[in-house]
Length: 154
Image 1 (cartoon, rainbow, N blue to C red):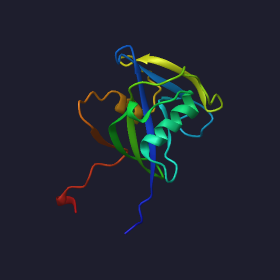
Image 2 (tube, rainbow, N blue to C red):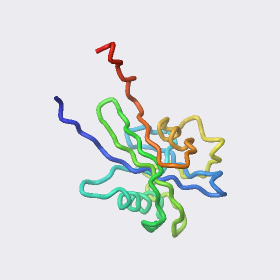
Image 3 (cartoon, rainbow, N blue to C red):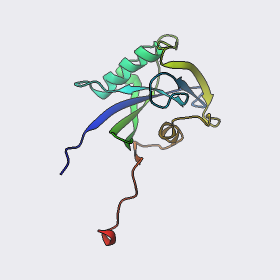
């Protein structure tokens, strides 16, 4: 049996205008999905709790402060890339303090609000799928995996 290696990440879902617009950032110079739109996100550091990671990423990438009670985990995704496995936590941001500012212009070409019903085509696909989920309860999804083999195939 292989030893699994999981990376963890947080994805912050900022909304305004009654949930009709969401904040996106255009990636650049990262070596992953450069030129595509995504959300404020990042890897969970070792020994770091999910909400603490989200608060840190919001400060580092968008220059805003978020109180722990203003974050809600709304979804979890088990994602596979070519050479790695990820557990992604999607957190809705209820409110924040400060003005949203591009704090990492070397990695983010632009921050922009987009209507949720008119997201750009050039988006990271699993992030777009997560943004378009409209579920009243916590959701789970898998992305990048082949369909599971049936018992008859085994």
